[in-house]
Length: 116
Image 1: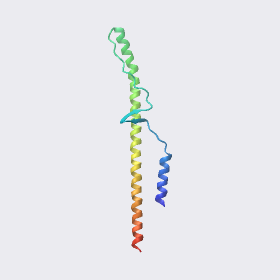
Image 2 (image 1 turned 30 degrees about the horizontal axis):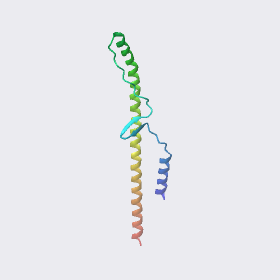
Image 3 (image 1 turned 90 degrees about the horizontal axis):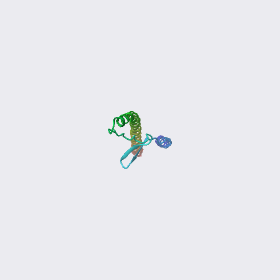
């Protein structure tokens, strides 16, 4: 009875836990969901001093945007990695609990039948 209660409780907790993920895995490729678009790499225009200076001034903004984007990717990937590992660990623990419950039931049945 305790085993059934434990399994029902674990199942209920699993179903009630919201599905949290940060990115999307599709066709073997992962992409972040909440980081926006990757900033376009600016071109360096060397056609004139003015054009070059304008290109360089754009680089600072691009570097800040790229830093924010790649930091976001790292954060989302870490969250997904943690979720994947936690899910796998929970599944393995549930399997171990099930195997232990089966073994206990077998032992109890064997002991009961030996007494007959």
